[in-house]
Length: 233
Image (cartoon, rainbow, N blue to C red; front, side):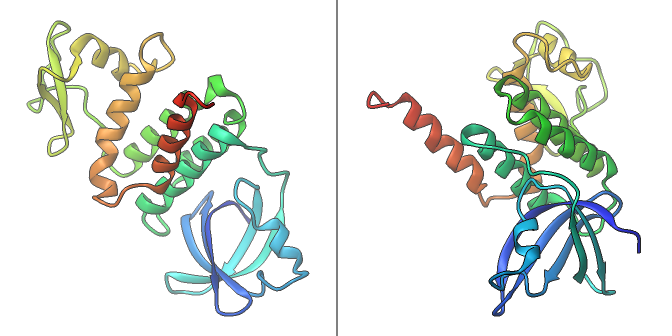
């Protein structure tokens, strides 16, 4: 096979010197593989196989679990710290949890690549995350329909909440106003005042895909936010 552009999503030790890895690849989506010998001291591959570092990889195997053969660097890793690092960990955990194995995900790969460019900049993180999340929802046929369950238009003056069964919006006093939802439907999430609503809609739409088990990265972000609010900081 031709070398595939890829990023490491998750890695854990396997046997004595190997690792089980989850990769996001350009043409094959999420790939699970064994990286043999990568945990061995002095292994050249050990330094390459890091989160947020662009790779070229090849693998062999017919089953769900592959065996990596080639693993080369194709550039420097994104330099992330603090909130930017936690956002990157969230993206990795989200894709690991929701992407089916070997489902082609070229658009998700493109938005993930763009996300890594934006994460070092605080003003670019939220929008880049929303684009990745909505691309993932589209791929999984789980994207919100900015209509009523029957397909009707949303009333700008009414308030609505997301209904996961229909992927549409039903009247709800504690929900978002129809005008905001209609703006979100246009994809202009960078407009003033839309960052919070876009996050809320994305989180509601992703919830059925993630199930009851909480995301570890969200808990870490919550802890970071609490430390920042603490009087001692």
